[in-house]
Length: 260
Ligand SMILES: [Fe+2]
Ligand SMILES: [Fe+2]
Picture 1 (spheres, rainbow, N blue to C red):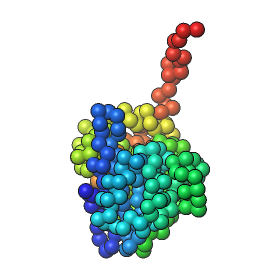
Picture 2: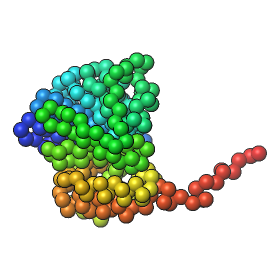
Picture 3: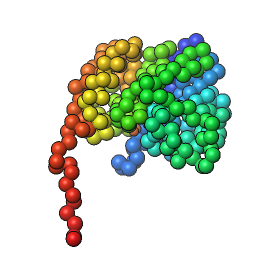
Picture 4: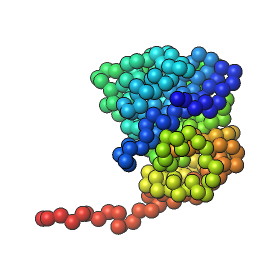
């Protein structure tokens, strides 16, 4: 089932939070998204092969998958876009991904499948027309991938934030919104300390994010941050976050002892 995040005047935003469940710590729960505008649609971070069949069936209730305009990938991780070959087979869509990853993406596909169908997003980001509306690919480099984008919808004012804001939860919890930010921090912190690159990227992102009119930040794992106050708290938390390179010292670079 999809969760309707926004619906008005032919514009619909949906999230799918329960297609991949955490299983004994072996599989990370993940969210997928569909934005429809007046007969056109973009699938955001559709996931890997585990999600493909369920997602295809589920989005069919809202939009004919064959007619998808875009598959949009925040970065090139398996849980983001490993299913891209199957989407290219079953739909007429093009794939949008960072110029850093465009030449790596065909490795998820059969030879020739991506020919002429990859739209590379330059480092500065880009505006993507969708129906009568637009989606904006917003830079979020090194948060966590080297070539990394978030997708902002100016109609719903939702920022689909990829792995930034991720928390490790069940699918049921992922469909909810965060109500107690302080309590939620402990569920985000281990992931962000290890998977995000460093505070310099965090600060630059926070300054940019404050220039956007954001009503709702929706990450690719776990629950979302809704309302001006919660969005503001999240941006402030990211701004001060110490992570990745900030935390490295020589203890992280020791050769494991082995028999010579
Ligand atoms: Fe990732
Ligand atoms: Fe992810």
